[in-house]
Length: 240
Image (tube, rainbow, N blue to C red):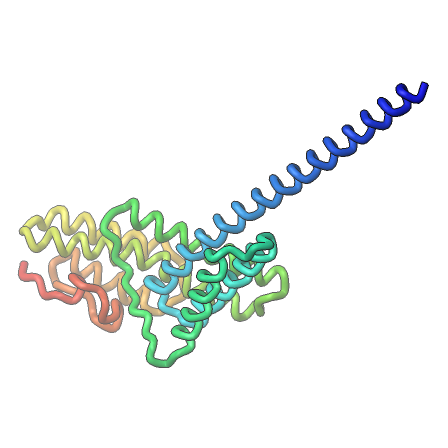
């Protein structure tokens, strides 16, 4: 009888140990999944941040996204008892970047043109993702509604201009090799984007007018105040 009791106790102990190991493995698996999810979110936010800095140029908005990255890195660090060098290095990099954005000497030159439709689509997706991120913050009460509307207008304008200015740039390139038919086709694509948009930016109607003049051959370039000073081919004179 004693042997049976001992065997039963041993079996119970074994079951408890197996259950404990299983729970530990399950917890570690969940933790690894959370870490992978956070790393993916950090990677995606870094891409959005780069897009904002290169395409929108708003340092206040860039700091806000940079702050979200910092928060995700801290969450990642809390899941890692050893506090991996990756997290520490990334945190220092984010803090240093935030200081750069705080500096009045830091400028974020805006460049809308992309080399291909694939690049245009990728940039526009990132801009939409930025709007979704800010919308979530607003719904959580972490962003004032008026501030959200302001950022959303900026991002939607950049979304429109990425397509418009990319097509204009491609049209200008076609003109440099004397292909006016292709150039007109690109200008018309840019014109269509602006016509389809309902964005309230006052530049939109002026751009429509000037691009229409480019299609008709009455203008060789857009006014600098409409495109900025960081747009490469857009500010070069092209002879017809």
